[in-house]
Structures are given as C-alpha cells and as structure tokens.
Image 1 (cartoon, rainbow, N blue to C red):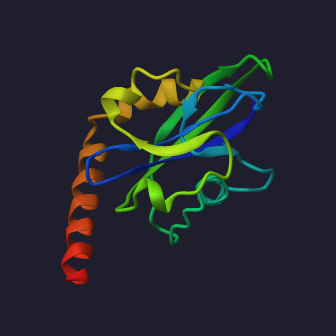
Image 2 (image 1 turned 45 degrees about the horizontal axis):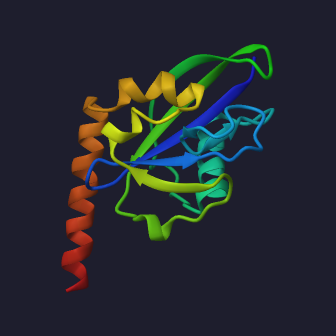
Length: 156
C-alpha cells in the first residue's frame, strides 16, 4: 500500500485547482487530478500535502490553512496495490496567473461541472464527486469570496 496526499484549492467562483498530467507519470498519465503525490517514509499526510502543493504549483500556504476532507482507497494498476489518498482543501483568491506548473501540462482552476466530465486520475475520480457541492466546498467558496472582496477593497 502506498500513501498519497492531494490538495484541492477553491477559488471565489467555487472552481477547483486541477492539474493536467502529461504522458510521463507511471500512475494516471494524461488525466486530470489534484496537486499531490506520495507521502514519504516518516512524513505525515498533512505535511506531504503542503510540500506537494508547493512543488507542483508554486503555491505555499501557511501551516493550518488546509482542512482535511477525507480519504479514499484506489487501486493503482501500475503498482498492483490498493492505495490510500487523503484529500485536503483550502480557499484561495489566487488566479491561474499566480500558479506555476511544476509538473504536468498545466494547472488551472476548473469549473466543477466541467471537472466531473474530464478524464480524471483514480484519486480524483474517487474523491471529486463527494467534494463538489459538499458543505466544505460551499464553505470554502464563501471564504474565498470574502477574502477576494477584502483584497479588492484593500487595493482601492
């Protein structure tokens, strides 16, 4: 069994930060998923989530920002193992321009309705339907709206 941590950021529109993987990964090539990856030996899931988010998107969040949404089990054919993927979430007022591509083809905010129809990684396919429209998704969207409105007000 392998352990993975993933992160979904929610913008003021309720859109989700997703990564389009390229053809190179062993797991889920050319699929869309959350920024994230392997939890290293001796590493906690939450620490891995912050690390992977920074490595893959350039987004560095302060400790305590992420909220755990849950954990799913997925079978990865490449490893022939049933693995655990823990999903963390946070609100953000960032835009596509503030995110860098550390891995994959691109990382962009995607409308949840569109996201559900994309070719998804196994982890995203298992976790996304339970996240979209959930109380946590709605709360993070509202938090992102308030944060964005406050940032716009402060800029004036």
